[in-house]
Image 1 (cartoon, rainbow, N blue to C red):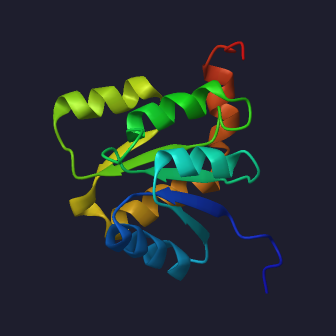
Image 2: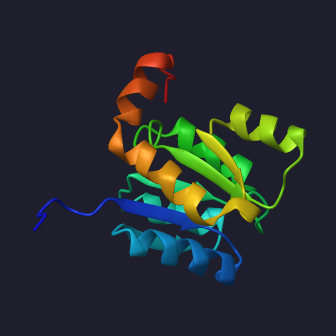
Image 3: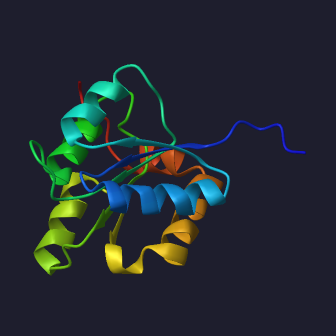
Length: 141
């Protein structure tokens, strides 16, 4: 029996069906999943909670996923937390904007299932936060 605490993943998506599908895939693999329906609510929730990885949709009411990611990268507590965009937007401009916002990976929703779980396992099986911290300059708060 593994007594290690479950890795906690935050899924931010305004589409309840999409969010539930992601939650189902990840809980089946043993992760703890928390859902937030908007970027504003996710940022507020993260003021008092910690996660090991964040999955963001791009198109949401209020703040876009790109803006949420930029704000996450400005904060000391989430600067090095892996961020995966999971979105229906598949244009090259969207991919480039996701990278510029500070994401670690950009996945189109059509590839949800096995690919998402493999990528989450990759990020959480390595110390991506440490490698991110080493490769990025310190940004003053």
